[in-house]
Length: 290
Ligand code: FAD
Image (cartoon, rainbow, N blue to C red; front, side):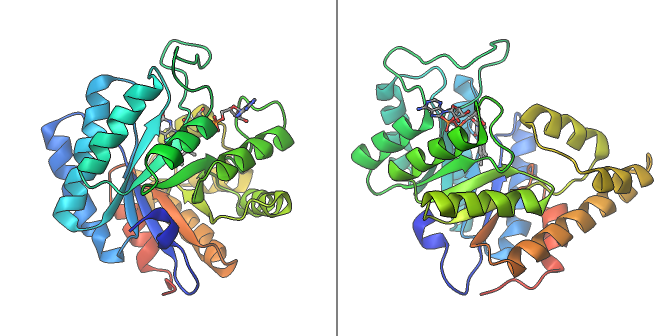
């Protein structure tokens, strides 16, 4: 299934995002968690793409394995970091030969230690250029791009960021998957803005169910997402009790999911962090359309 076919009337396109595990044991555990998540019949499963060579081949290995073992459609994330256009074409050719149907096309973050993203000679400066290349050279691949309800950290303004998103969609993206957020109002405002600008592909909210208070404070500070005060209070009320933090996180993600479905989102993308427990608890307690 391509990303374009994942969304439609009367169905909710579910997707789960994994990251490449570092060890064989991590990979085995990951596959066990993916097997549990298959109960929710996702439209596709994605795997992130890192800056180093070995994690990049791991991304391809994971998506190929998930596709083969579970018969589910997959998407490889792909970034422009440190690669020429020809190297990106090489990766995409390999991915397509391995049966990968979709790409989440990204510019990527600056590599560790670097302050800003540097375009590689012969490479791309922005994600819209990667999308255009995929559309012209790999027309059968589905393409999703990243959207930022709370505005990308480097964007000079909200409007400039939205115009950039429009450029990515005009270059041929089939859907937008958002950065994680914890206030649905941010998502609704973003969706309205996209509509106003004529971004007419599915805008899919990305949710990361919180499982640990310290971890989510770290993640949100890195990606610039806001943790609303009432939510922080709920998490802090759980104190140092790991299980209570997990339960609070499930409650928050369930409430977000219910409201998003009520408000007609085309799908939800869960950042599952290679685990199944939290997403499963959330999805078991909501009525999934379709
Ligand atoms: P772009 O869309 O290229 O935008 C980058 C910045 O440049 C923005 O501030 C934008 O407003 C600005 N901009 C864009 N075009 C122009 C232009 N023509 N002129 C001036 N300014 C412009 N990172 C990884 O390393 N690996 C992953 O697997 C990964 N997966 C992700 C999945 C999702 C769903 C999301 C939301 C993010 C993911 N990221 C990943 C993070 C992403 O790489 C970073 O947020 C990165 O900093 C921006 O990538 P982008 O594709 O949004 O960039």
